[in-house]
Image (cartoon, rainbow, N blue to C red; front, side, top):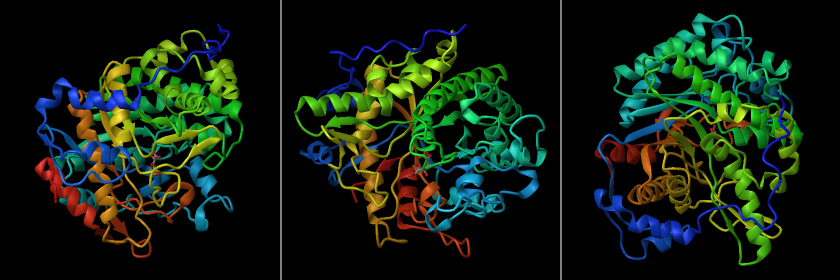
Length: 495
Ligand code: GCO
């Protein structure tokens, strides 16, 4: 039965509920859990971080068992796009389109991780990490997306999880990190409601193979970016520019997530299961009513549109005001019972944090120092805000930070002090959130190594380890040594 659509438009006069930043920070200092975490902040530290500048020297000790990780995704590192029966994905198609990727880059070879997996596992071990977030390439496992399973493709991930276990590193597996099999796109892709069952079937195949050895499962990476970049701006695969379609896609991705949670449970996987959401704290550029309203609306399209269905079983009431076309797309896709599926209880939330959004009356502004990525403003306290919001407003779920990082600053190479400062400040911000009660269980730096940065190709380097894309030689940057010290001592040192 088709319902009339998502919760009706109700923005008038009703502000989206979000914590005021000052309240959030007060929570961080007064939280009952604060005493459990050893931390020492010089006076003024919070204020310094609040403005996006460095907080200065400080020590922070993390709880025993905190997971120190690095992250990658299949399409960005594996290469070998035609090896051993892998089928084409939408990103193969898109990246070969003229003008789609900076400098005409493709991921045909990328880091060639597919052929260098053992050496890369040794590299991880040498970094002292205890957790590795990777993604399984659907077109490697099922070359046409459904039907025949490719044993060689599954075998690669089987060896990967064994290789991790042998080195004492937890496996954090993402089922979908944007590389939809092209054959499924040809059948309508995520716009087609059948995609949710294609994904459920694929999930069952992977769960049967890896279900006894994966510590954490992430269903779908960043539905928000798939919708915004893949279906609104068209800058990512599949390169569509149709906001109504993006609404349908958002709904189907949510449903696919819920179905995957159910399938993983039915398959009896031993690991914890959750979504992977990219969250961006939104704040007004000034005190005007216009900036405040723009902030409330941006908070819907950046955060609550993805959080609420999964954690509350509803779409945000302000959605129709925030994005009428997306709301219309969702309304055409929503059927009775869907929200129950989407909100199937999860064990934890994977959170990717990169940048805040600051809204003026005329749109987003840049308030904090921009990174070389252009779209990213460096604002470590935003991570505290995001984590404490989940704690206060969403029932304090267990959280793992599944991505956080920055590209090399202009002129940096193996010596990357700006990445060290970035990671240190964000880890201190994360520690603040834990002191305020947020249940954060681990952190994954994006990325293990330089890789294919989507439309930016190889023009941005996000790795702790440098990759020479001519020789494929891997060389740890200074940040890798710094991160190793943090991971192996379980604390941030002032120096
Ligand atoms: C993301 C992606 C990564 C990016 C990273 C840097 O989740 O956006 O997961 O693939 O490479 O975020 O932009």
